[in-house]
Length: 594
Ligand code: SAT
Ligand code: MN
Image (cartoon, rainbow, N blue to C red; front, side, top):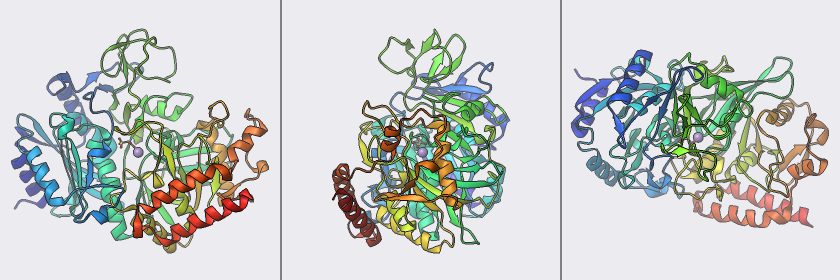
């Protein structure tokens, strides 16, 4: 008797016609074998999929150069295929599921001829967690297979959990010929199915990540009463040894990884990392909100990562307990066979190739590493991994942070008046666009509610209502905060030092959560009294400190108009409670102007 899983794999093989079918077990030996294949047999754009790097300073490191047209997520080619357009909402590209299936069938037909089909059973979440899901991805690319081993829990436990069941998330992926004209990332939420063609890039190709753990999972969460969020999860241990947990949403490439792994500059505080990108939030049996990180690895932005900005990440990259670590589209120091990127510690190496493979030196006006170049590393290599990481129940969340990159308007930190106001803060978020997605203008502001705009698998109006519902079910809801590390001074320089000093803001948040300090009311929320924010040892002038918290009602006229226009795009799907918070903010700002 064939199992539903075997049946599904056979069906995909009949369509894609690979020369071989290989079932991955997720072991280290297998990873080594696949790396060999990637170095010797498989090619991308005529080049090997992997190059070895020296083990001397970067143990277990391998270099991958993508197809030059395949360096970031392609939101314009990403579709959510609900039976009707309204369910997808104005925040998604929509295609009728039948039409999408037809289109994809043509692309997949025979696409694996002469190639190996890798079948990867994997878990999102700890196999023992009631919140975890069993999944299977098929791919024809060794880079994708090895990346999935790092980012998920791949192998036997997932197979065992699937057994004879029909209940597993399906992902079919082929890099095709990397032709952007034939590149689509299609989601079928009704069937827990993702079909992705034509790209090997992280968010497009590692289907457990954004495609399943956010877009599809957000739809499951809506049906079942939980949240799939674009959030880091971290523990903050205070000098008395008490650890509290927070989850924080920031858009791609806005510093989630650095925040999640922060090394405190305040004595006595220590950060425990649980995740840097995705959180699944469930109402626990005690009525508190519990978070798990469904992933098992980091897919982080390389440029700017250094001992100064993120020492724990550098240590993670240099730890080879869980093999291997991948570097994608960074620069390459050919003399020492090492990865290199802008912002890395030390001298600029003398013999460099840029991310495309052309020779590079600092006289060039182009970047050596692609701005969205990435490393992929197991979370088990992280020196400050929380001991709760594998706790099947997850961790209870005390505070939720919503952040973005805003040069003006948004204070360093502000606490929401209550859950509903906090949800509103999430919905009105805007952020400067980064290099994490193609076809968008880097630097321009776009509305990005809860940092989920590219990842919410259904109508965001309904998503906001779902957030409000979750709040009603919580006996002890986390406090909600808006954060912004990126406010600039009159010369366009960041005022706040960021990185390890962000602990100062987290300390205030913890002091608020545990009722140790009062706060000052502004139209945007509650901000610290200056005595309560520890700025000791920082060289920030009193004027600049004031600027960090300034609420200038005049500057808000345009922002309010943009928020209103954005909310209107959801029509009647936008909850009335969000409109009422909007009016409350507008009234408060108008009163402050007088
Ligand atoms: O490319 S990913 O989607 O995996 C990373 C990101 O953009 O957040
Ligand atoms: Mn992300």
